[in-house]
Each structure stands twice: as C-alpha cells, then as structure tokens.
Length: 356
Image (cartoon, rainbow, N blue to C red; front, top):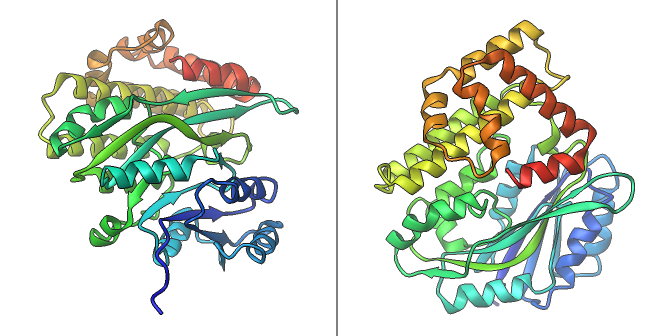
C-alpha cells in the first residue's frame, strides 16, 4: 500500500523547551486542518522535553518524535526534512504557537494558486516582567499573488522590509522544489535566512497573505536573540554579501527602492553589532571595543550604507549620526545605552525596536 501523502509536513526542532513545547504542539493539534504530519526532533534535551513529546505522540498518530544527540537546530531540521512526506513543508519553533486556521487557510491559498511559496503575516510577542505581560508587533504585507518571477522580484524589497522573507516559519514551501534543488539548512547560527534565500533565488510562483497566524515568542533569556555573539559582525557582513549577490542575480542592483532597502537593512544591523560589542559579557577591553567599533563604522560598506539609507524614524536617524560622523567614541556610548535598555527594560527596547 502506498503511504498517504499529507498536505503539510510541519518540522519542529526542540531543545530544552519543556515549559513551552506542549503549547506549541497543541496549537497544531487544534488546527482546523487535519491533513498534516508533525515531525519533532528532540535535539538531545536534558529536561523533560523528550518525555512530554513522547506522551503527546502516544495519543496522536500525526506526531512523530525523533530523539537525537544534540547537533543544533540546522541538523535537526535537516533530519526531519529527509523524512518529510508532505506536499508542502512548514517550519515551527518549539517555543512558538500558531492560530487555529493557519494550516487550512495557507494550504487552500497555496493550492488554489499553484504556489511554490506561500507567505503569511506574523506576530512578534515580546514578554517582560513576571506575569503574562507582552508587547505585540505585527509584521504583514498586502495580499498578493505574483503572476511572474519578475513581479515577485520587483516587489521583494517590500517583503524584506516587513521581515516577511527572513524567517522560515510564516511560510509553506513546496517540498518537491526543496528536494529538486537539494536545499538544506546550513550548519551555522541564524541558519534560517540562507535556507529561505536559497529557496527564493529562482522561485517562480509566490503568494502573500496579509493575515497573521504565527506567534514568534521572545521570552527566554537563553534565546538565540538575546545572547552576546563574538562573531555577530562577521555574520552580518556575510548576510549583506548574500543580499547584494541575490539582487545582482535578479538584475536589480540598480533598482533604487531595492538598493535603499538593502543599505538601510545593513546599517540598522550595524547598530545592532555596535550594541553587541557593548554588551557587558563582551570580553574585550573598553579600548578594544572602541577600536572594533571604529573599524566597523569606517568601513566602505558602512559609509555607503549610511548615505544611501533613508531612516524611517527620527530615532533611527539620530542613531546613525555617530556613523555618519565616523565618531567611534560616540557610537560606543550609544551602544552602551542601547545595551542597558535592552537588558533592563525589555518592554521599552521592544517598543523602540518595533518603531525604528
């Protein structure tokens, strides 16, 4: 007997998330769409994550749990991808959750329009304090079905601007395309962005739903987004190279709107790199921190970007002043202030970031 091909394979890596994973899985079990398989990879958890998942899988044949030695989220996702059978693939983090109609409505949209990639809006929920207090930021673009590859490429800068094209988890990917191109997650932190870039490089049929379904949670102090990264600047430089290469491949290097987005994206993330250097956990001396910041803001890329970028707020325009002035000491002081706010007032930091 030929095994049934589910409409969607949901892939979820899980590592030490025993306080969150049940909510994540139950948000899938409560979907109005039942034709899916959930492949969860317990990535060597040392808490009760594996036990919780096994108890869920015992009562739901749609849930399959794999237990593996810790190898990181990219390896976990790839392991599940090798075993996925669905027409479309969706990725989900084990500490997030989704609205009940996400799978049904995205699948119907993708099938009706014969899409290789379906994209929806999402929420960023940033929790603070000891209660269930959080800020909610909506990321969404207008409904659209791009009839040609050229239409998608010309509009992609707007999707990048609203963070629609960075994460893998607000999307349905046509699995046949993933396998035909042998696309897999790369063994690096922030592995999701290059996976998406590989998929969209020559994608033909893309559709966008403005409705948000996915809740991306910022809460845990040990989360990837909250750590000091000694190699963050190198990673951001690599990402900028990918973006420049993508738009060169698309033949849009000279497109004014696309170029402004790329340069603004770079300079905003450079501010994040400066803040990262100013994190108290950074092992450099103050002198070395200022020296590193000086090299960042005086690079050719930084000076090109700070001229081309058009900040969306007065706050961001003010934050770029030290870079324009090539003033490393002022940039260091600014970075220390941002780091202080980030560590001591999550609500204020999230609000400022959302309105940058």
